[in-house]
Amino acid sequence: MKHHYLLCLFGLILYVPAAAQLPKREFRGVWIAHVNNIDWPSRKGLPARQQQQEFINLLDEHKRNGINAVVVQVRSACDAIYPSEIEPWSEWLTGKQGDHPGYDPLAFMIAETRKRGMEFHAWFNPFRAVTDVQSANIAPTHISVTRPEWILPYGNLRILNPGIPEVRAYILRVIMDVVRKYDIDAVHYDDYFYPYPVAGQVLDDEATFRTFGRGISNKDDWRRDNIDLFIRASYDSIRAAKPWVKFGVSPFGIWQNRSSTQPLGSATSGLQSYSAIYADSRKWVEQHWLDYIAPQLYWSIGFSAARYEVLLPWWAQNSFGRHLYIGQGAYRINESGSDANWRNPAQMPEQIRLNRRLPQVLGSLFFSSRSLLANPLGFGDSLRQDLFRFPALVPPMPWKDDSPPAAPQNLTAQVIRNSVLLTWNKPAAGTAATDAVRYFAVYRFEQGSAINLNDVRAIRIVTANDTTAFIDETHSLAEARYQYVVTAFDRLHNESLPSQPVSVVVTSSEAALAQVKRLFQNFPNPFAQETYIQYYLPQRTPVWLQVHDLTGKPISLLVEQMQESGLHEFRFDASDLPAGVYICTLRTTYMHLSIRMLLVK
Image (tube, rainbow, N blue to C red; front, side, top):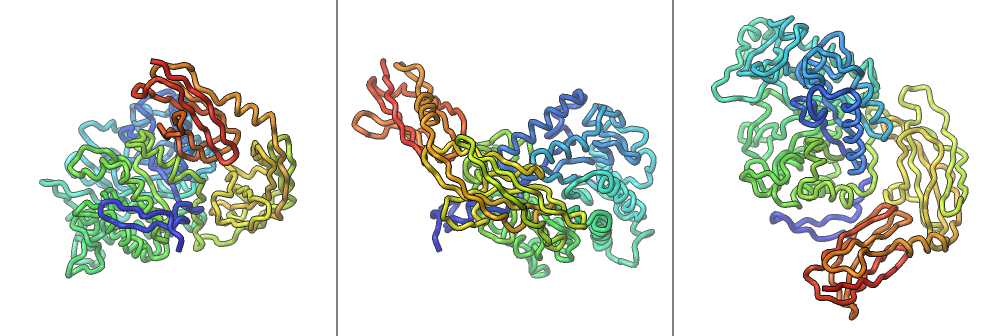
């Protein structure tokens, strides 16, 4: 087998196949939390237009980073960021629980997400009622006020009592209200079920256990069964109402530690969600009560109590044919705690590479938006330039729908200067709700090469919607012969067969080459300490930008990466170099240019 490179990190020796670096199908999600204004909006009480612009900015940045799904918190503590007849508006929007923000944030978010061709997962916290009774702004219509008998206190936290059947039905009513009213792609639960243990706090549900025990003698088993009943009812209700809507849970990353009494557990020694918060997450996926599971593996490679490299294969072996996405702790990158591994910029990229070595692992889900966009230790750069530099399609779920659309028809290609205008016809839709075409992918191959839909490098665009036209701005600098095909996708990401291919010849453009030569310059020139090197790329290409002296001796490799078309600028610091003439060379797959730079002291 051909290998991309030998990677040594944290004492691990990994052979990484070249193909593993270029996945065509990969879930790339990010959590966007509104509780405590973690991610959005940036603070309470912003005008509607500013809230909207902040969300648009988030989406645009995540799209540039290669993200293809957002998991947006729509209910954090028995409140709502959408108009609800059941629960009050969230205080994190306006500053006062129950106050209308002046628009429907959920409808707006879904529409903007759709424009960018990303999935929208509606994230609910099912049981949390009040995050902190000392600071919360509680409306008179809040469930903790109207049904206090449903509330369990736990320190400053208040939760809805999972042991009361009417409570579980109430929560499900809230969730199904959103499923029926909004065009979401998935319902998502986080890891909060029963509260995490706090020293000195006791959860008093003894009376509930006696009343609704269902013949279960052990209270721990009963608590787990309460959550099991809720998870199964959620899956069944969503599937009955809208079979195409997915259901996923992001549990705490350790189910149970391996022991003599539990040999199925992981080789870890941390908190166990099975006994601490009564979440039997392995059972949920084994019983196929979930479409995907996204365990929160917020530990580093090499962390002794819960090694990432130990938990990852454990979850892969216990995914039972359902989708497995890994919850990645982007918020931990460069943290100042005792685990120095997080201060290594290679930590998170290596976790993603480990994910790709296991076929059961189908993607990542990052917590959270703010952390990811802060670009800690350059991680965002590594996504754009390396790990996510090619687009990825969300993996399909054949148990929900395995019928792809028909192939696009009547594909045509017209050369216009250095661009190719492609048009096609949508295939006829079937009768099922999932049959309609949601988007297309356009592939381009060198003339004479085989059409390989698994080569992600051939994808020119994954359209955001069901458009039937695309302009491929090739900006070819030499005669090139291309072959195009287009495929169609439904909302569950089943891909059609390719259209009939079309071939075109794009001729050379002296004008385009002249423009590239004219825009390759440095300023100021001559310069004393620093200069700015500017260049124009007429098309996406790998770029090498290097400075060397007149003897050809390399001085500095400034750029070595894939770059998009457009104008680029790079600052060159020559304060440590002697005065003289230096050569800056720009090399791409289609040109090789040089300029002289004069350094004076």
